[in-house]
Image (cartoon, rainbow, N blue to C red; front, side):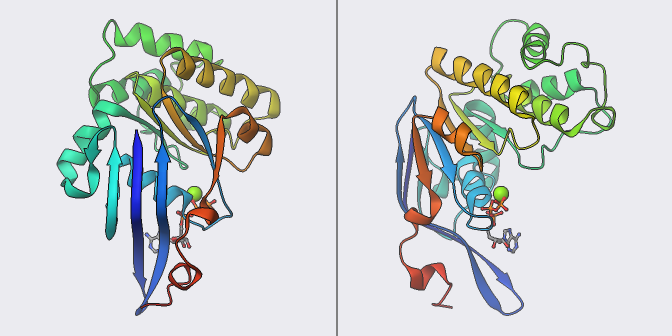
Length: 229
Ligand SMILES: Nc1ncnc2c1ncn2[C@@H]1O[C@H](COP(=O)(O)OP(=O)(O)OP(=O)(O)O)[C@@H](O)[C@H]1O
Ligand SMILES: [Mg+2]
């Protein structure tokens, strides 16, 4: 489902180069549920964005759902993401003028469509994460944890094979977070879906089948410190 080889992504800052993400090798099989951990600033978000095709690495091979993303242009990567991937952004990225229900439905516009009635599916998802009474609220009328749950529903609306989530439970209380994770993992298990979830919460990580620490994927200290540039 996911294969990375010698991947690096850097940013130029004031004349020197910051290595944002470096992965020597990473393999994730179809149907696996993986927790991605690592300290702040080690490149977890950058890696998810590479997997989603939002960012292209400077070097290396990235195969995701059968496509070499490093060889595709931006439009083709966007199409690939719409068809195969559901993404929960660390910053949610909901559209402010639209209601919770509309935000979830907007996800269906860019996707392959999961078949059946998208609206009924969106409503069912919002119900499942406890937002049945909040569907007509705009993001500004929701709590941060509620906005986060809307973003999770938007990621699931197209029934994607691969679900990428950047700390999707970071603003939930323990009980709600546990319930949302139950919903997610049940949907994922039922559909044989692959899940990669960034988390700082050890309890959430233990619910996943495998934990990958980004620090262990870095090829060498010299490269990790950006020493080459
Ligand atoms: N657009 C950018 N320009 C320059 N540097 C960047 C940019 N985006 C990220 N970085 C740097 O790349 C590194 C990795 O960032 P990233 O957001 O992937 O970390 P993270 O592991 O997700 O951190 P956190 O746990 O805080 O979310 C950081 O040192 C960051 O400062
Ligand atoms: Mg991050």
